[in-house]
Image 1 (spheres, one colour):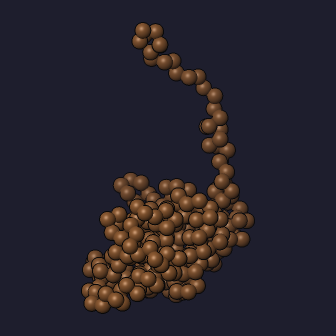
Image 2 (spheres, rainbow, N blue to C red; image 1 turned 135 degrees about the vertical axis):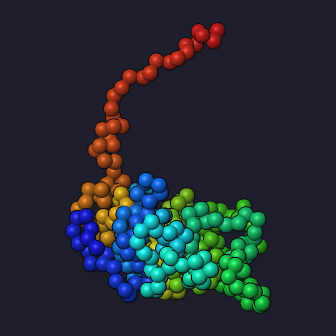
Image 3 (spheres, rainbow, N blue to C red; image 1 turned 30 degrees about the vertical axis):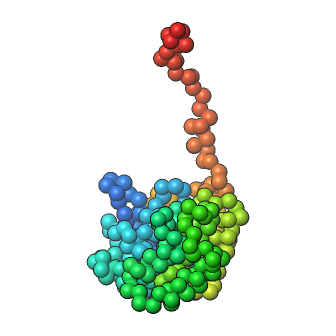
Length: 284
């Protein structure tokens, strides 16, 4: 597809991607959130989705796993259309996905081990608990938390909770991992731990990853490809160098954290303070 300013071949929809959307449009009532997006996400690569708050990033990735259904358009996993499937059929498809929710979404009443086992119990009948215990151990080892099996979420730091949630996301050995703001609420060091884990899982598990983030340091580090959404459309699509040098002013404002001149003008407007309705003497 075309960017608003120029073309980029990586944004062309094709039939070799792990995921594909065609004409994806989503409305909530009269509000248009996604506007006729068509693109393909390459297998084994990490695609990062950036953009200002409210631009539809999370709405977009939820369509990739059919947690939301399009108003118009189609969504494909491995060349199979999934947006029109019944929930029973979707449950089978979703075993190929892992989803790291923004807040981790761990169950507070369950131990770390029980949280990781949860998706296994949802999709399969467990007959060999020793094998499951070994699986939990191996997944926690991958995120550096083996030994935390009997802890509860309240006993963990924010970064540790994110890592447990990531261990749960890979419990079913997914082909695709969707990350919704994986570094939100973490300090720079803990954020970089998550970045390193995203890279590790891509490298060791050969997964296809889609990462939604506001963190440009994370985007540049983990992304093979970066897509920027604005007003429901893709306005930039390419590798880190392409994004850094993109001519669109909205892209530059976002990646450099700059307030637009129009917004600055509003913030700097002078005005008089409204007169107080009551004076101190009124309460004497």
